[in-house]
Image (cartoon, rainbow, N blue to C red; front, side, top):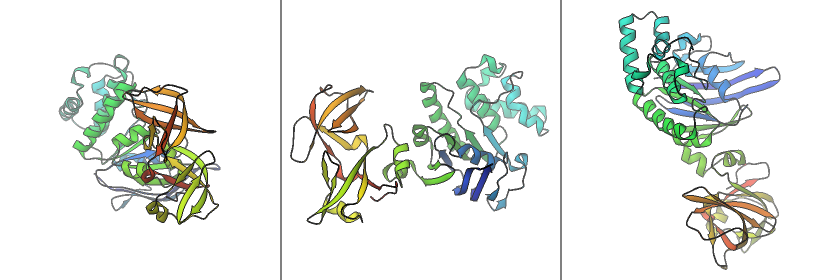
Length: 361
């Protein structure tokens, strides 16, 4: 395994900056997820690490070795692609054996290695089949086996589960996580699926427009997003954002959202440095909203517009005046659309952002 270090990595395609001065380290044996929407530069970053693209600026290190000018085959990386990239005329056995034959291994060594990795991935009985005779999950395992059999220093996985159905995707996420930890190979995993990233990664690097916005553990990027983009991209359903005006009353901050107000506690008021009259964005996650059947002095009046039964949870779409928010609640509720309820926010879990999206609290 190796440690990957990217220093000011930049790639341009004409006038488009696909990767913009990216600084990122992937530790030995770590599974790091590059997460972001389409076009954010995550796949280009993967291809730069593999040597399939040449950077315009910056450096790539494997441990202390500069690999900028090293060919892809000499970097000893293995890639798994979204479309599996299996040779249709070859059996699963021959697809897995292909990189070993290219390296001049003997047929006896090839057979031993192919059978070992096929046993590891539970595909020994599939080795005589061609890709057209395999399901999506089986093709994915063959593609993984072809990468593993090379014993690479680095795994690079580009949206490897996106073609699988929901049930198989969940199963393969767990299997991939377990497999990567057992092999201990440094892995960079690209996806646009935040649920996938949260479940599989040791750390997540969130990208947008070629820039790295935040890197941290799944818990860190979820609980303490650095800006509104990360806050909205991580979490399903996404965070509620509400425009507010800051007011100050007796040393406490009050967020005036027009149709309701939120009084910050003394402790939370001391955490922020904002001006009275400043326009801010209040962020609250659906699970940090409590729905109450009766009006209380600290609650906000709301009406239910829609209920989505996801089981075991429910998503409750609420209207407060002209403001719409979504709450996550337990499924054993008796409420229905058009019911009038009260809601309260978990003040310890509130997020406050500047108008430009920068995190304040």
